[in-house]
Image 1: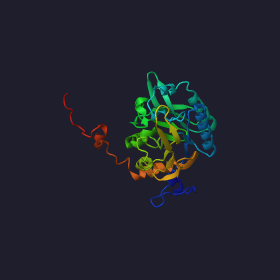
Image 2: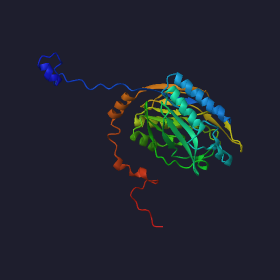
Image 3: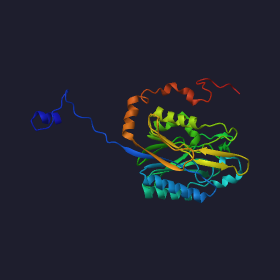
Image 4: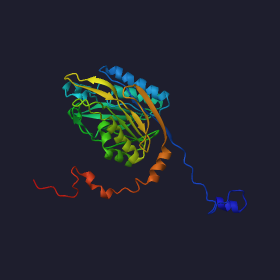
Length: 325
């Protein structure tokens, strides 16, 4: 229509092969992400107050999506197996910390994924609820991969998650949330991005290894998640805790190494916390530009799901019949 009007002398631009019409402009979709870290103790009220203080600090600095660390209401009780800690689990409905964080998200206009120890009938889960910027509960994710090793004995406390990987459509973009041990599995990151996640978030509790104090997993931990960001071309946020926590019923301790960070869609770390500082760090991204970059690389165009059958098995022997028992 514009070309016809131009030809008729109406004053409109005449478009042709040498002067094509402009593409429909796409507005930037800017979002500011925040990673956080702080030490926890056995004063549960003080931990929650610290979490609120941290969220307020991040919001004041301009954050839109703020990631708190894993299980911040208490010390990391999974360092040991003891039945006393089952009392920390609470149902999602009526949970006082979740209610407080929902009100905080609404007051500050920020998105808050909140980690908690969930009681659901006879089951217990390591879970996250995501609150949108208006305080709306967008849903629940239950940790899929449950570790079991010295100092990280989560299988004693948590059932394997049954929600599947989730993507939450927030007012600031679609987010996928994995929890700690989930961050070591590329399948989880890819599944969330395939479902529409534009940002990956990992609340975490990780540090030293009680059985081998010389082992430092931090570089490996970080590089693994940088790979998720790069392979899926999405920004990624990881929030860890800091401080040394002593087990209450055995001679063991973990020093959590902090190092919370934010990576860009190429996997480059754009901002990172120290190993011991209580801090909020921020980075700003254009999700529109990231989306264009993701399409341009062709990673999702050239996928071959028909060739990935081995990923659906434990031993990689796709298509082989199981022996009769």
